[in-house]
Amino acid sequence: MPEIPSEYRGWWRIVETSQWVNDFLDDLGPALLSITGNGDRLRMHCLLAYVNCKPTKTGVSFTWEGAWEFDQMSGTGSVRLGKDGRLKGRIKIKDGDDSTFVAERASKPVAPIPDPPSYRDKWKRRW
Image 1 (tube, rainbow, N blue to C red):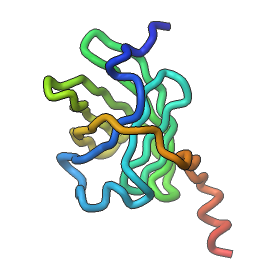
Image 2 (cartoon, rainbow, N blue to C red; image 1 turned 30 degrees about the vertical axis):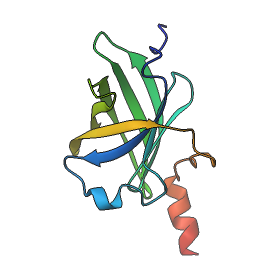
Image 3 (cartoon, rainbow, N blue to C red; image 1 turned 120 degrees about the vertical axis):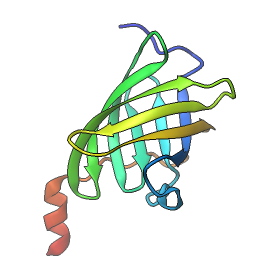
């Protein structure tokens, strides 16, 4: 499998979206996307997800699988590097919404992004 180009590789801070309220991007911690091609993660609003990235002719595309709060979700996305050095991307929820987003280069978070909760975790909390 081809390697992720170095200009995309690393951590990116999602700073705005076109369809979702930007005030709540950091509900679970800084909104971040990692792009390395190995064990990538996404955190944004109430979404925690595992990400699988692959290079394309125009940037990087990815699939993701995780949970929005306790609801299991998956989807796709893509990013390209803008002339200003920021990522311009689109994220799609399978059978749901989609939004464009902008991300800026960031440092790896001090604390790892938690694993997405499972549907069973929702019921554990009620007891």
